[in-house]
Length: 473
Image 1: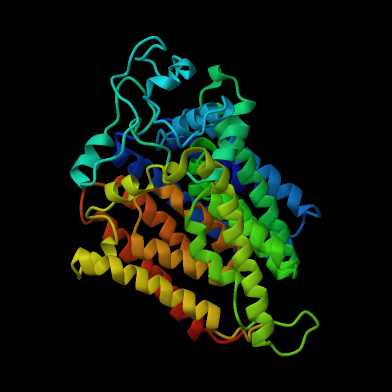
Image 2: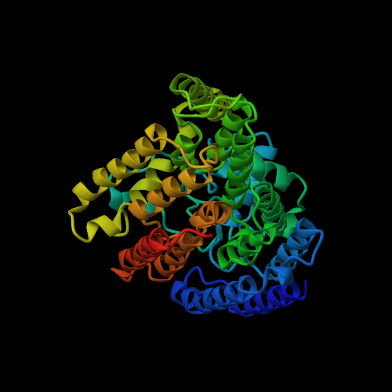
């Protein structure tokens, strides 16, 4: 127990130092300089803690409570600082406020004067409710240069891309509305920071419980709780990706315990309704070679039938979330997704593959690699004792997505951190570190592909060493 307290105290003090530099959205290099030492401290603390004798780590009879308290303790410092890595929470607050007022969040851009009555001095310090913005909702340009012009921030509001429609799927919008409904306007984004911290703590408890049910040490969930990505991006950053992580952990737990396929599909569909990226993990929950409920050899027909139920349910839940918005605004439900893809389509898109291939070849190849991994997961046999556990296949799928697309936003790795802990493959946290290097080195090409290449090497050589290691006696 004392080791947990010491480790938690060290990480909390470390994060206080990181957060004290303030918002670094316009100084990403500074965020990289202060976050990389936090990763070094995290690695040393985890190594020190888990190299202790098993008896020293097993003194607590209430590991779930210990994990919850430790996770809460490291999240608390971030709640006393403004978000350090981005201004995304301002869009969360705005979208929730718009939908709570009865207006569909996919209808108008934030600067549209038809929403002027919802403005306040926090989100619109340079634009009064009775003052025209000079902009209205209109289709985005078709060329990337025009999209980049529309994506420019405006000093009159801290909302990111105020001329863009929201890019977030419907479950995320429902989450924004729920948090905004219980958060006073004067709190700004504080409600989302508190919500993100609570979801991170809840995810730590879910992981501890899942690890114990798998016969592993529940205190391994501290790897999630102490991780820089979780502390900096879930609580302080408030990013909605932490909700994706929680739903994926729940879906994995439901699949392992052979809950009804409808429940598994619903949880995966809800995760995709927060961010579309969890669709890449769907094959992990739909293997064709799936064990029969009563035991015995895996049956192809049983696996196909169950997989169809999971897949159709997941896609149905996602479609059901979009349906009321489609009835209200029609094709505008895509929001600014096409603009976002165009904006991110520069030198950092698929940058690892683009190191050796033209971008017009790298993009299709990235899709082909993800499809190949998905096919291997769906069609491959699962003859190991963990064949019913989707955590490792989901980790491989989501990791392949990050490696092939090389995003420059560090918080995209939050679901990967949860899956790495659940699957016991901590080397995949190298991708989370790469996300910070890409974020801090954004605009300094080739920082992004070099960071992801280094992460790939860490994963590869760790896997090779594990494969060459003699089996435990």
